[in-house]
Length: 230
Image (tube, rainbow, N blue to C red; front, side, top):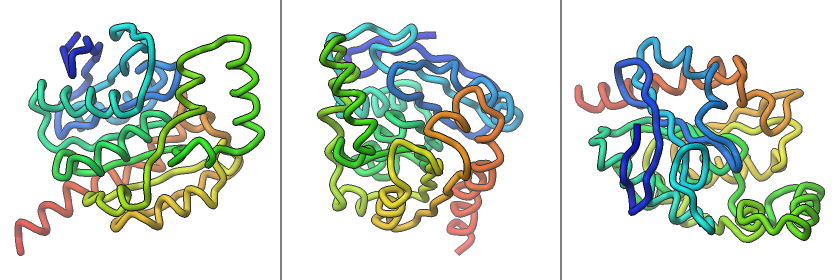
């Protein structure tokens, strides 16, 4: 299926039925990385699997900016009238999720972000050097994006008003200390450090992610129910 969002044609698929969950992949990937996770989520959730602009079957673009992706997702939610979804974002998808939650309070009911950085400087030096070297030869706009963006401030994180789960792998491309900083600036957040895994190993085509996030996915819904009772 396709939807026009923020002037760009976005490809998406849906699975299951129930409260909505949006899954956003990382740089250079598409929605298919979540095949194992979707099999678990779709049992009692409606899962929206999105190809971000310039990825998968979505409309091709010449350049990439996280702010554009953020507005794409906001427009997608409005266009499909998705009411307060939980958003799970991996890597670039998690960055977009943080920006979306900070800019649009009330749009989400919860956010899970895996392997995210606030600025390019927060990536491990060895990874940044590798990306810079690759970009010298490829001149790839997706590599350029990672070298120049994002630029998320602590004040933006402090504006996030929904429950947030941050996950980071022990061998991630961002240090665990940075993930601790991100979680520490968000009012209602928790952090899971995943031992013995790298940036993508527990997320991409993996059965390891669902057990880490399943409890959290129920939490925003339960919190709303408690608030309605009071």
